[in-house]
Length: 142
Image (cartoon, rainbow, N blue to C red; front, side):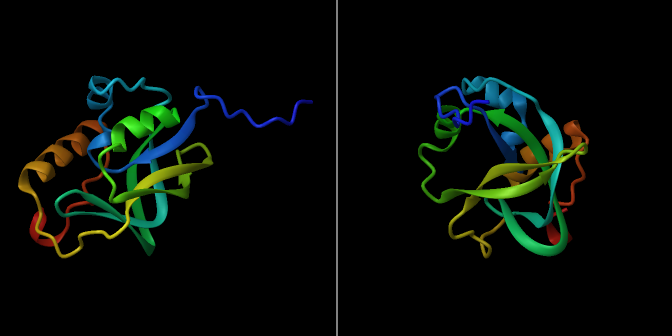
């Protein structure tokens, strides 16, 4: 049995998206190959919307999103000019099993920022089209 870890540029990484990157068609326009798209959730986290979607840890909450398999190069394409994000590991429930996945989270989330109505409209459309609950939107931003 070969115990070598596969670190080639073609190795696939599970990644959980909770904002506009949930939209597979949009990813394809950026040159991303869509692999194993599936609805997923992270327990004890939530998503709020300000200028962008923000993933936060909160006991008892559930963050809904999409799980894909991307290469590191594809992830780099999506986040090359977004220095305010960092990859963090999460246990993600894809409905069949719990998988280890990364998600890109804000280093200093703009929690006090105003909601960007254009961003919020795009995100609501993605959530509705994918069948995900619109619990990203609470209170005054519904």
